Image 1 (cartoon, one colour):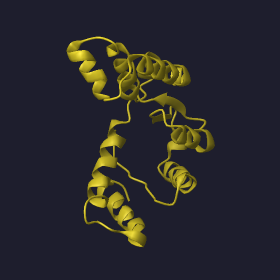
Image 2: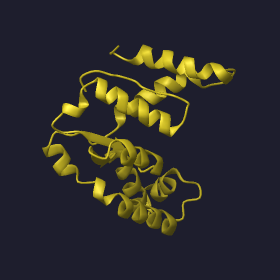
Image 3: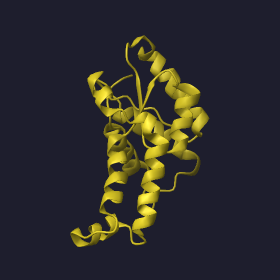
Length: 165
């Protein structure tokens, strides 16, 4: 990562997608030879990809995939009973394996990690996950009631975390 640039809003997915497109254009991403859209398996993230960034290479976050596969691998076995069914109190091994199989089948087109690394593309959204946690620390929590003031606060938090104008 060269610089951190944060764009956020409470206005909903369509507004966020539009802001991301504007920010990507302002930063010259359209001219990049290789572009990646890295996200977890959430359908809302992939709808943003489809609607706004379909010309970017879609990449499923490696860590999210790894967590699903690990949960399935540990299902039904020890190592202190699959780390308590991978910390799932209701962890039926059959359910965990079925859930993982569905996840991998739904995401397999976005999991060509060797090729992505060969192209120099990122395979994790860890920078984004960290930024979300930093914003949440400033915005969420006990005795924080923002109502209509949340949007300006989000913008201030984004400005504070950004290394761009």
